[in-house]
Length: 73
Image (cartoon, rainbow, N blue to C red; front, side, top):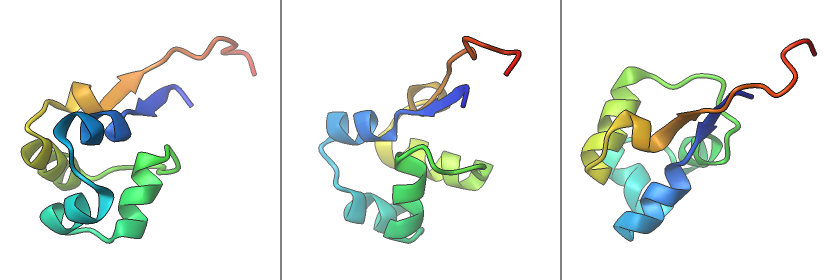
């Protein structure tokens, strides 16, 4: 998938655990885990905004575009 979620990197930089972050932004730890492990197929802007607020970062710190090395697949 060409979008990579670097949520675990930002969490480590901010010294915050998954349970604490999930509680701060109002989602379940299971849903945060899906997002953190690149298993999410979509993310709501309200969730992205809450993540950026809680982690004091920009969306680009969490989401990264990686071009597909073989676009013909």
